[in-house]
Length: 218
Image 1 (tube, helix red, strand yellow):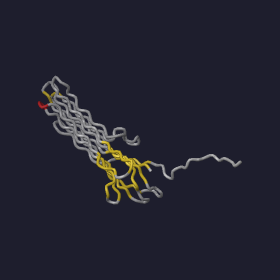
Image 2: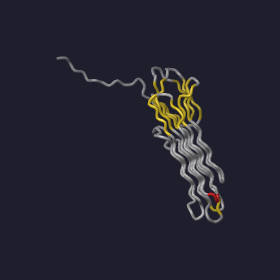
Image 3: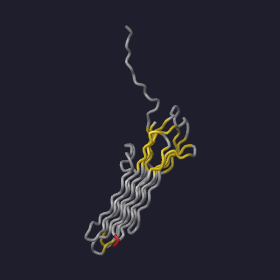
Image 4: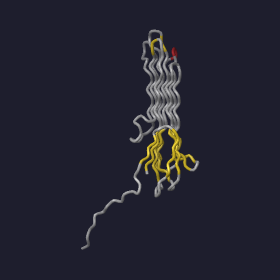
């Protein structure tokens, strides 16, 4: 009878993750032997809107910013090819009586061609005084992921701020990023900023949103 040898599972030649969570543009060189890379791309959220001032009673709250979209897929690549990675910058919080800033798109390009892109969240609106609380910012829309096992997830919109006076003066809540953001990213990646609460005799600045995040697994 022959000798039975234990079966040992083959270990992949590469099992690594590269995470980019600082806004800006970066390059990644595909390692030797790698022909597929799974990517997760999350855009930045929009900033929260500023609030208004009320006379004695609180003013109206600013709207929450929209969350950035997330796209995921597996790209076919060539060893030693260069990927250019863009990580979106968070939208700023709107000052008193001002809207929050829009976020920025996160992208991956290769050879000058767009391979993956996630749309940014929009800034929340300022409090509207007698017209009510500021509307929340629109959610970021997923754009493209040019590979296999594609998952395109829109963010969620921010909520409206409170109407002030005898009603709630709370700022709207910022929307969440689309889909499931990888654990290697900062916990709040892609989230919209909360709107500012309405104040008495003065308004306040909304909260800044969170930056985007890009993850490569190979």
